[in-house]
Length: 217
Image (cartoon, rainbow, N blue to C red; front, side, top):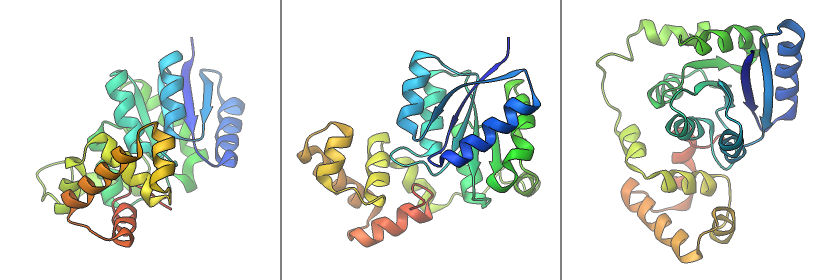
């Protein structure tokens, strides 16, 4: 029985490239689903969970790290690999703290994805070589806690999702429709987000979400 994999990226060309490499080079990996955002991944996982999930970090509506956290909570045995254009410490750190087992930089994805899937499936970690230097630097050990990172983890799951949608340019009405909640509830969440982060201008919310990796738009 092969390793069941779901791939998620909002760029079809990325999914096509990974699928082509996997299907051409190995018989022990089966791609059972493709998605363009985190919500689609979660729906697939409810109906037919995969062994390994390869998730783009910057997906719209629900980003890869947030999706990873929900997947692991839903199915604790799930193995998640993040696919990203970012190789900065803060993105890698957030992913690993969420429970992600692998982190691949997109420019090397086709060369590394098969090895990464096999490694995380067996319970190991896999990091692109450009990422592994952070491990050497000891960032998983005792380290300074960053003030803004602390702020992010103090937001509720719903607040983080709404903050991502705000950063992606959704209006309050559009957010209400997307999340199937009332407009008043959106306003309350928006107010709470601004108070928690001590940010009171829309433009500053955009910048904050981009800097913290909640959205790449």
